[in-house]
Image 1 (cartoon, rainbow, N blue to C red):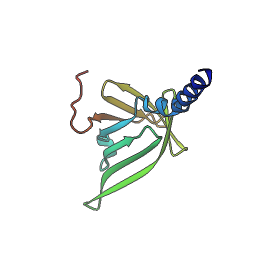
Image 2 (image 1 turned 90 degrees about the vertical axis):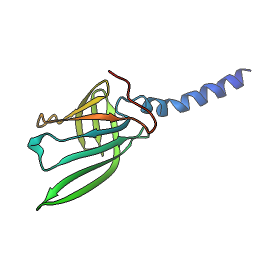
Image 3 (image 1 turned 30 degrees about the horizontal axis):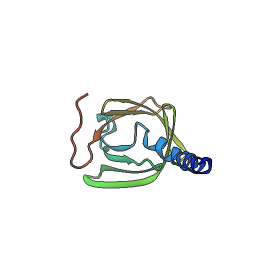
Image 4 (image 1 turned 135 degrees about the vertical axis):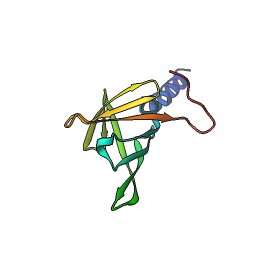
Length: 125
């Protein structure tokens, strides 16, 4: 009996890193728009996955032509700071279905709104 309990405990402990990543307030897909001062950049979507990876896309205009940029990489979270690809860190805050990233070097912020998973609706805040 003790041996079986130890195996269950070990299995539960093995899941902790995965469960803690899933519990992050930024996991999910978010839609945003850059402030007018950042024009012509329009931030599209970013998806933060519980495994520590992300994919983001942005649309911008060069000489009147719309361009799209897609970037994937890794992210980590510590307290109220998210680090992208191990080198760029941003402070974040989440209120309901809104997420705000702030660059601590410039003080500039970007707000994003959660995109509900397919077939679901967002709960009112």
